[in-house]
Length: 389
Image 1 (cartoon, helix red, strand yellow):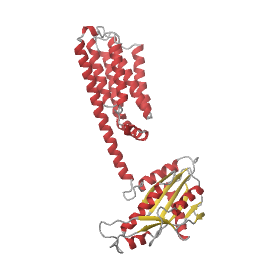
Image 2 (image 1 turned 30 degrees about the vertical axis):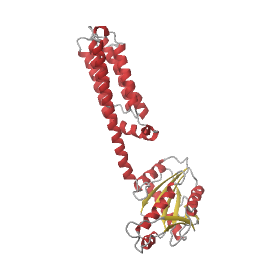
Image 3 (image 1 turned 45 degrees about the vertical axis):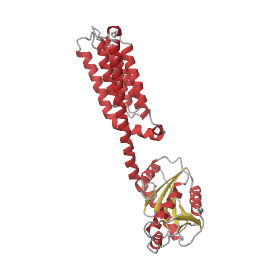
Image 4 (image 1 turned 90 degrees about the vertical axis):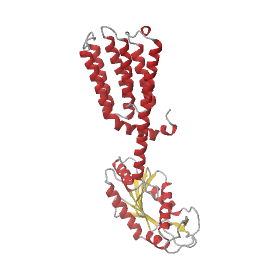
């Protein structure tokens, strides 16, 4: 049975896209081979009474059409449906060939059914799809063929052979699906490692810029803004309290960015963060960042503190991500020149902008007993708290 946690739509869709990319080429090659074998059997099998007929030509056209249908820019659903339809057509094609033989060969149905079942076991990534294919293939080949005379066979041996063949096919499909899922999970783990900042858990520069490229490539119907945040005087935090305190500051700010609605936040590097806002106008973005600056999670301040400056720009359709970063960077440095601890929104011209002066988001870094200028003693931890300035 499919595991419930693997049946969530995003994960299942990602798995199927991965499998389709991996199996598309081998699947088409196997299907072309099966069609070739069927054509060769029709042409050179001495037991076949007639060669090409309107029915066989129509069947060949249908098989080729299904291959084109599932291979030409096919979606995942189209690819899955194409696999099932192809299996049913292939079983019907071989049934047609067997019915055209001068002397019907009852036992030929079994190896054909077994070969078709085993062939699809390695290229169908969902067990429910494979069960449907198995049922259709065996029903078509065993039920409707006029040459099959079950009375002329030993029923017990026939049942054992059919059951064993189906179990082997199911076992092979289970092994293939398990391997494909494990490969997909491993790929996703590596992707997350490559796109996640280890300290903050936010997407890293690569992932953020990739998402920014997507936002810039989209049509301009939905407002999208990009904010560049830079911690003020972050070097002083590291110098006064140690790098553990600086890490705590980065993690605290990352946590607040992660909670922003309709936003994709990431760490660009050092003390710089970027946020992509979907569907929010400039005023809403400014209000969100202003609120984040002012909200206090746990009040109180003993010593020190920090704030950030932010520049906000609207992304333009087709604009390169590097240009968006440049405009946001200019707006952010304008906020620095205006006294820091504020958000500046740039217009279409990066040289013009309106600014919000918001209260600073501060993080208290209480050093443990025994700590000094260079940080706490080994094993101690900084505990950041935010407050309203």
